[in-house]
Length: 215
Image 1 (cartoon, one colour):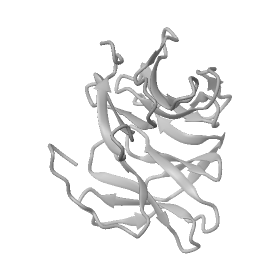
Image 2: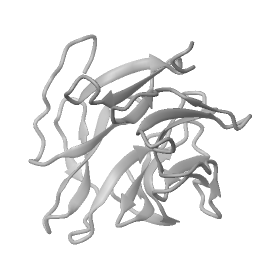
Image 3: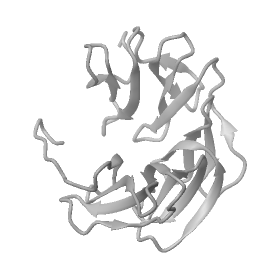
């Protein structure tokens, strides 16, 4: 999707979780494999040269996220995080986790356990929680400078988008409404956050200042 124009790339039926490579030349996505569970596929940006890079037949995979150099992806496989080579040549297990997001600097991976957001080294090791609010904190997304995380929380009872400053620990509510807001992603300049919301009655993309509704 670019400058108001939309192009449909026809992949396998049921393809979900698209993720652009850092150079914008490839697209990773999840689609049913031979066993019916979700596997990770990679295709060129025009939809050609597509290939399956994981084969997990009976264990579903989700949420592929690229390393900054485009050589690897981290994926969620049956509630665990696995790093796979983008050419399908090998893999390495990290540990339990959901909805991984590789940091722009390449050193850390953000993820959730369904309750809080954590950071772990891309090399492995002990994960560190960076949220502790009541309820569920999910769908972490990095700012381009790697200094902030957007995420979704239901800590107030409503499902809203928040932004965490990793240096100061300060948290700001990006949205505050009774609608269901989710799937945040920073704009390339880091000044805005795009997210989904059903506030208009249908699921649409919305955009807000990354500083929050009062900015």
